[in-house]
Image 1 (tube, one colour):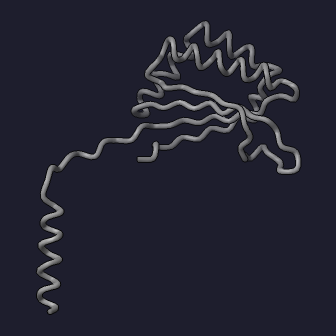
Image 2 (cartoon, helix red, strand yellow; image 1 turned 45 degrees about the vertical axis):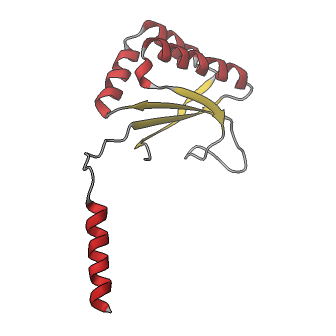
Image 3 (cartoon, rainbow, N blue to C red; image 1 turned 90 degrees about the horizontal axis):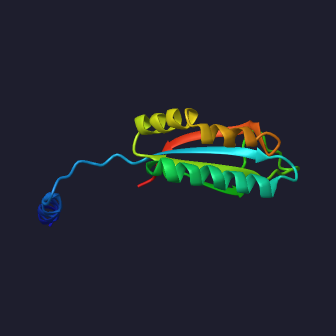
Length: 136
């Protein structure tokens, strides 16, 4: 009886191993930046974030940038005094593509103009960055 179970198990494993072997594709690289919105600036922050996403989508569509308003726990959050935040998300095929995107934005006059608009709208000193691979 035990011999039969082992043979069935080996045949099952052998049958499962047949088929195509493909290289595992690398998952995209994701970058999050969460920033506190200055009090009373929710509408302006959402509009500004939308302008940033539109600019990135128009000029650098491969970056897959998005933004949304909400509340997330960061080192700058106090449970007793929640603050509205903006979450910027970028997705890139690899780290080199992310660096190229960042370099291009830093050299882009339109993006620099949008960055200057953040003063008084987004508390840049509160921003927290997270980088990770997308889940499968």
